[in-house]
Image 1 (cartoon, protein in one colour):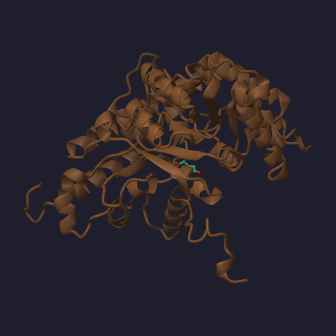
Image 2 (cartoon, rainbow, N blue to C red; image 1 turned 135 degrees about the vertical axis):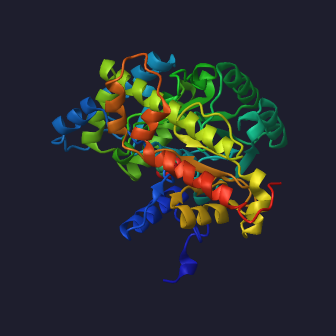
Image 3 (tube, rainbow, N blue to C red; image 1 turned 90 degrees about the vertical axis):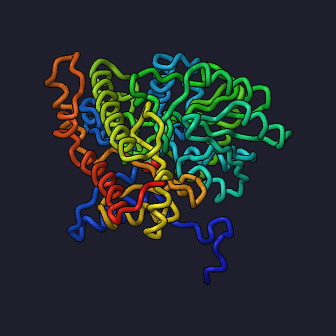
Length: 434
Ligand code: GLU
């Protein structure tokens, strides 16, 4: 009955940082503190009205659905990927689960191979591998190359681990860096993966939030080896609905079947009303297109504005291209931070929260070394419904201006300014920046 009976893979495993920062931010707010919630990456936008209506109309759906998903939804998902991303797939290739996070976990349970994780990476890939007992092979990426995986680096890693079954998790638009890949870069990575027999788990959950709508899927370039992961959480503003999807190449049908078997012994099926509503989301249509068009424009303008302010404060960061994250590096302020006793990204984010009320996550939560001074900013603490409504009232060719952002996303800009002001204060004693 003591702690020694805990599975050693789980022993000492902390709460996932995205969840922990959200809980902490809420607790501090409840105590009356002004907290800017830029920690958890949750869409600021509402679920599109048509999808909410579909959920309402299907509240009575109470039966267990097939383990791989509602047939109409599997069809809608396959059709969505064919239509939007030119991915050749059929409903039989699709599995629906209670969040793509759960499907990723399931994949690691059923596939006995190493997990190649480009770092920095979303917080949960590596802990999931650890829970299941898989080996994680980090693949370092650098700010100077917009945090993109170099095909040569993948090839080198494959050479070193020749003969090992491997899954590479490729996530773009990327969490935590906000950058993405061009079709040519994807083709080069796909070619290496093909040569080296690596399965790619392509986490495209932010695909629809590519800031110019130009997302393309590596599943079109390496179709036989790519598992395409998506879901409702980000583009449909429905993180709490918990609905994720995987599309498998037919060559990996055995893996899909194995996932179905394990799913049938664990969660059984995904919530029925949510699946019925999701059919509406994946079918798309003009109202969803207009919703996405507005979401992309707001996120693009806001990301650009925050990046400009952070750069003016001396931080280094890549240009945002999709989703709602930025990953600035505070290294240019290292000496001034050290004088305040701050030498790690965790110390940095802790002090930022204490001294400015801005909640962000440390780079170390994303696999960066502790002494590296990166942080992830999720620029989502604003009323997305209000921002969308305000944009709707503008002419179609309206270019979003700082005044629009100040009106609709004021807290996010204030949080940015608080970070910048806090940095400026580091030099109040008169010492110069290194
Ligand atoms: N993907 C989101 C994030 O990185 C939150 C969801 C989660 O971590 O489960 O903040």
